[in-house]
Length: 393
Image 1 (cartoon, rainbow, N blue to C red):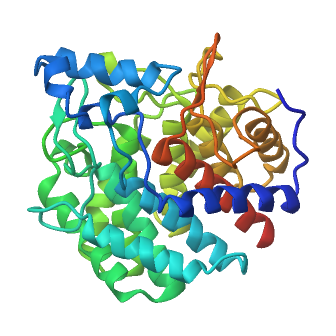
Image 2 (image 1 turned 180 degrees about the vertical axis):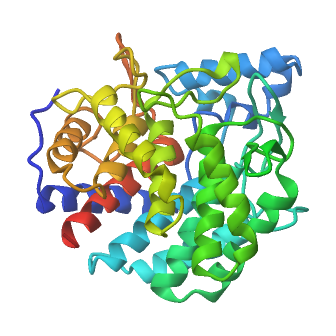
């Protein structure tokens, strides 16, 4: 383990430059923890079964050795990764940083995102560049999700606001048609519903629901789509009303999905904060404050060590510190916490030789496979958010 990094713009700048250069050299193409079914041997190895697909995916995701070359899995362009990089690049441009030609990078990322939109839906939407299987459903390549569409929709609006990309605006403004027409909803009452995860299933997850609500709220409040505000607020109420007494959320309300984890909590809070900053859901302020306190106290140790679950240390996933930095960098009076998370992040997951970030640390070993979406895109978003926050302070 390396000695803790000094928290300062100089070290942050070095990490950002190295990471962006590495990703640019690969045109933002890479492998993913969940891309096992992209192997040409997948159907044979899985016997075409749900259990087999899940087993192969988990084998590759958990292996400390990257088995993808053996299985002929090629790096590819993941739409969500491109969206996260676009968000980070736009934040750096907005901060006044001139280390790269951020406009040109953003223009290229935007063009690729427009080409990678999913087909046959009511509005712009995005999935993953691989098929994947979980316990509840199988999703073919580019089956869109509300999570991907929300992150990318926000990034496209950022790019329009910073660079004036008209095509980015047009794509983002059509995302509500996908969310409202193609995504199933769990209707609890006239003023409360929950969006599902994707068009092909009825899986009601708080972070997906709130991410979708936050994009609808932004488009409704800032771009004149008043018709999408009520659905946004109804979705927000569903999740706000299910925040637990201690300030935590289950991942979802189904019995088998009642775990409490770090980065999905962060996604919930980012989405609620977006809506509060738009002057919406004022009645959720006390719930938000309580949940922010829970997030800070239960998912980060005093030295910045991030916890995946609220009740145990291992495993430590790159998403946990990255999302912690993203959220708390823009939260008032959290400088000490951000400093400690950043120092832990750089000391434990950063590869100083090439600027990349490791995937995970378990109790017994580290998984150092470099994943473009899961690791590098999130690390870049975190460091860009932190740099922008410090420059704009």
